[in-house]
View (cartoon, rainbow, N blue to C red):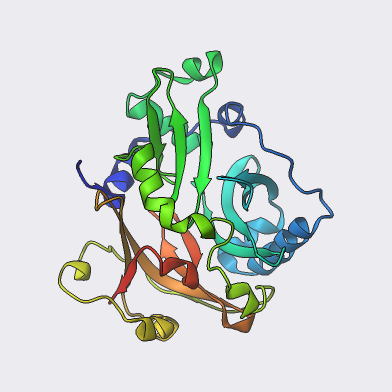
Length: 306
């Protein structure tokens, strides 16, 4: 199998056309029951949204509408999507904790957020996997949103011809993997699927106050490829990651998955530090926007390089 890289997806996505959210979302599978507006989940989402909307890049969230959908397998995570005037403005992923509460796993501000149906449908058409929106209107697509960790996430699509495809949740690009590959990669995480960073919630308080923010200049992660020549940062060095970013160091995170057929390379451009010291690393997305991922959830599938 050829190696799929994030940079290839980034270049190809420049060709995508914009389509109305309403038209595309009609074919997305309906969500299971979502906790009511006064539930603990909604209260957590509201508190996190209020904190983030105080940041300049998230200020649109003050007036954004939000939709909450469950993420599989099982209903242990939820996808929160934000929209302003009908246009995507970002997303948030919330995970259930072993104690029965909720943990903020990752979030981002972008016109192409995680599991965006517009992006995915356009990518299917461009890749020749479907003929057009007329095909979707006649027969809705059989789709699943899969999320086990920030790096182990995908759309799973069973095509009309019986073939199963895994699609990147940010770009819609078809990944060179099968059901067997997905199950093999995720088997070791089966017991952790209900929560990212298992056990962390008992050690630190849930994020509720955004205490510090740092944003550096965007850079091309492929201008240098230290993962080919250097050793990754040690666990002790990673603990000082925010200090390196304060000094504007160019840090890259790489995850090589599915027997080295999929390579993710993400440039770290800053961070958010929440109360209790919980750190979310900021990564430049392939499209205009930034993705923030909890540091503890990144140690399982990849490494940082300086």
